[in-house]
Length: 441
Image (cartoon, rainbow, N blue to C red; front, side):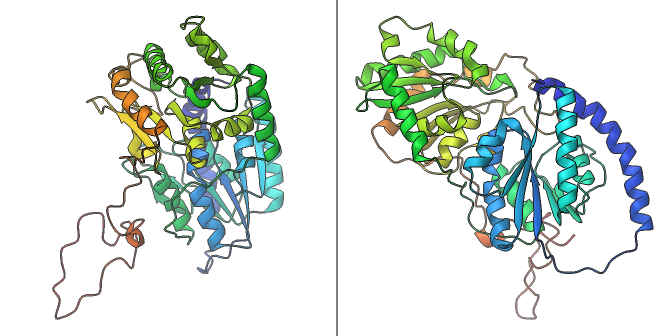
């Protein structure tokens, strides 16, 4: 499997070089092509591209739903990497998924070439590039030859001039709103910002229950799922394992009928096993290492059976959010203002020290502390446990990091290019000064 670090380097250097090369062809093509008359958008086929981040794909679901409401007869497909295939299946919003295999450089080349051949044969009207900073993603959007191409514009990261609809990326707004701005550029607008609920077959739920009983977990026991990993992108997002150990011991001591399940993918097994071994033999009778034993679909069924998920900033957090499962999550290198859960019954811990958050589009999500994540170490088990107790006891709570509604829903996605945001001036009402960034372009 190609490491994220290697893919990041390839995108920076190879992607940057290729963008410059093909930008020349694109400029010549635009000069030679006669300008067509502006017509209302009539989209029958839309391709969404989102490669990295299972959680980001879930956060993009309101955008896809808005596009489907605006173009109800349109076919909306997805181009993503193989790790996200199951997420695409259980999110009932895509008609078809094209898959890129990331096991090696050759597999990426072969699978992407095959996908692009099929995409060009299908002749999409619009392609929505939902990646924040990938240069290669911008290039792929160009290769689809769709009539309209929508994506984020970041002057700090040059990605070529391939977009027909540039969308300003605001690094101070929640990712859901950023994705919704892409939809709005294609004429789709909505006041529904909730992530799409995922669907789990009943056969999967039955299989999960049977697997738990085989492990010795009884149906009457309360399940507390704990995710100690973050995936390959910035391991500095992990809460220290000794803090997890302390918190789990508090849960087991106070809730005698609770069982803790340490979840994770197959690649997480070494990390989860190391943490599991920190507990004594008696404690391990109520703490089960299930990393690698459930696939992503089964993990969703497992989360659905759980009373709460305790997790780092990672994909399972957003899986739980889409399942309406209460969560306790930890942020530091990344900010919950962009990626935190947005509904009720989610408690977020975030210290916000001077160097936090440090991950952003400009540094391509590389933390400068090289593992010395003080922002995470400062969050203690003693301050977290009352929140876990509150959720286990069924006390309603609201996340302090919801999608920000500083203005009315109608005006929320207004930006400086909007032509109809200012009230008409009259002789009776004086025209007020408009804050910078809210007027005409």
